[in-house]
Length: 115
Length: 161
Picture 1: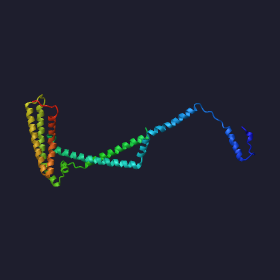
Picture 2 (picture 1 turned 45 degrees about the vertical axis):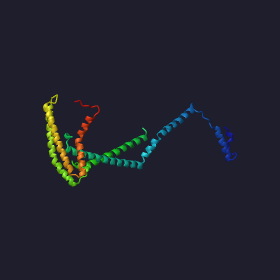
Picture 3 (picture 1 turned 60 degrees about the vertical axis):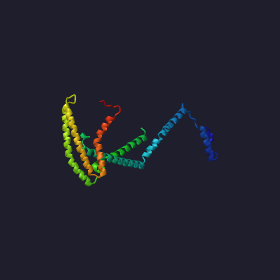
Picture 4 (picture 1 turned 135 degrees about the horizontal axis):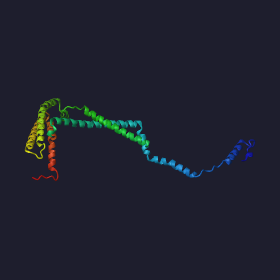
């Protein structure tokens, strides 16, 4: 270290800062890398990239789930399902009630032993 | 399990439950609101008015005791036939006679039933009456015709006398 060069009494403050900066750069210790550092870095990069790749495969699933969770769409879908189900049920119920009534009439006027 | 998958499956199950629930509720409500009257089918199917229904109701009430009487006779004859066949390995003379009597009773009952259908059809407007008579003949006599035609018309089935 060149301690003798550090003198606050000499030159302007800018020159002093420049010198200080140079000194700091010189004093920077270059740490030795741990063994297999580069390999570890690549492994971590690959690990970080791997989930992103697999998420890409089910991105549409997430998008669909987000769509399903929209309150307005969910309510509209539920309403459509209820109305469609009830209408179909009433239609089929009418047909079944008609068939029941026919079977009831036949059972009374023409017992099974005659048919 | 993936969260999105759980959400979608839950939504699907909920959707099915909503659709199924409302379907069965609608069906049940419709069936329960319909009249349980024996003659309600006639009224709906043949678009009959109150006056026609009143006449049919009267005919119907007159026919029911006769029908019940014939049914009791048929049931008694069937019981006699079963007794005649009981323990027998072939159709003996008594059983054959009971079969003939049972067939005669059934024919008598069917004739009475057809007469009733004719009377009912005559209380309806002509077109509806014809349709009613054809429908009742199809429903009550058609079963035997189907069986007979399927027996005689089946491929490879030949009678050797």
